[in-house]
Image (cartoon, rainbow, N blue to C red; front, side):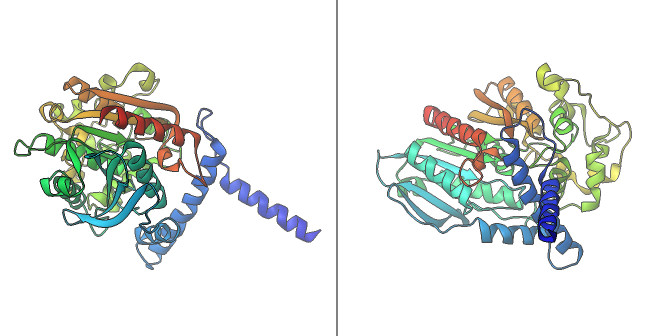
Length: 406
């Protein structure tokens, strides 16, 4: 009897920890709850280790990722896989063993808040294998440096160096890649890097080869407004909570973590901030850039007065290389045809949708692929054991778009 009672108590405690009220429209809520419970466990353990001075929270999380997720570069019957470097940056290369010559080419940047993960993770390894096989394309997954050791612009410089090398005559010839059929892509923080790289290289008139497409998967694109409708609607929806995104931004920009409450209150972008002019504000004015069905009933949170020290301490908040949504219209107009995936239950939804509008206003052809039942990170959960139906659908549609446009 006692054993049964103890078991019932443990099961009840586990259910209480796992259960989380979720929006009714989210895909397969129990899978997302289990995934979130796992992530929260790792996050809480890393916070304890950080507080005790054992190690930085990011180091523990990446160690767990390495133990659980990283896989060796193993070739299969259809795809040759090898670890190499691209412009001095580590990269995993996926090459179809058969098919046409020359191949299409895609350079890919993984997500993880500029601090976590690797192209060697099982989920990214599987994604890139599938892309290489189904697109008959050479795919290079880049392992840029990570925070906290590397901070902006280190990750950006790695992504740019890898992209320049990818577009070089030497690499194109070595891997038999068609210079007219190359693209840049990434998810979340990797989508940020892909967008920034597309802007920089699109404006570089010295290049003889340029990207034909950019494919951005739920990209993070700005850090001035943490109260967009999607931030307000989804602030407590896993797997990317609003405070976690603010923490990632501060780590990426090498800023003091104590500034987090000021970012979350939008004190850093108050109207008395001289560094933020009307032109910059218009580039992320979601009351004008978002359709009514996304604005819903939400209202802007704009402070009259805030904390001037934030912009002085973190001027990178206004750097378009870190926040591509802030780029000038002329820069956006030089970027290639775009695909932007967004998810309804994602704090970053409106970053992506505002970017779609700004790209279109700049004359860029854009496919906006929105998932009403999607959540942040869903595409990399397209495979077992945590296979998500919206992840599988979104991944296949993403690959289909590349197949039709690259």
